[in-house]
Image 1 (cartoon, rainbow, N blue to C red):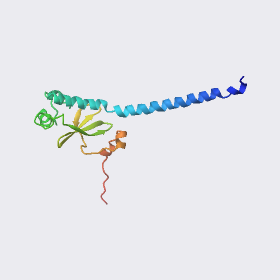
Image 2 (image 1 turned 90 degrees about the horizontal axis):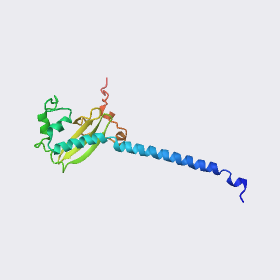
Image 3 (image 1 turned 60 degrees about the vertical axis):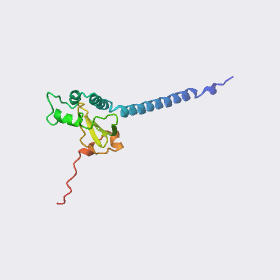
Image 4 (image 1 turned 135 degrees about the vertical axis):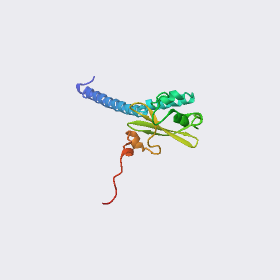
Length: 167
């Protein structure tokens, strides 16, 4: 026969276990959410670059040129269709996508950059986040630290150096 005090505190112990479980589940959800964000934050930009590559492999240069925000009928003032064909056409040296290697990635608030290596030649492409247009990367040889990449920070590339001349 059990006494009155044998069950004393059993409900509180069960409640404490439930609180600990709830806190652990909540912390786990936060970790999973952050991991998913960092894994998928450049998903649309990677898709844009993969679609651009697929169009170049199909030799559909007019459609690939539209990824730059231009059309053959209304070319960009700084990047004419003829220049685009020099850079990406059959005579460009950027056609062997089977041997192409990805050599780096840069993540910023305003865009995403990825480097493609064709033999000895390297091409750095940039996807502008607001309008998803392509361009060449503004800082092709800059190495982004892991901490800057974690926070999408490229502000170090935009700062001007102070004038160090002595008065």
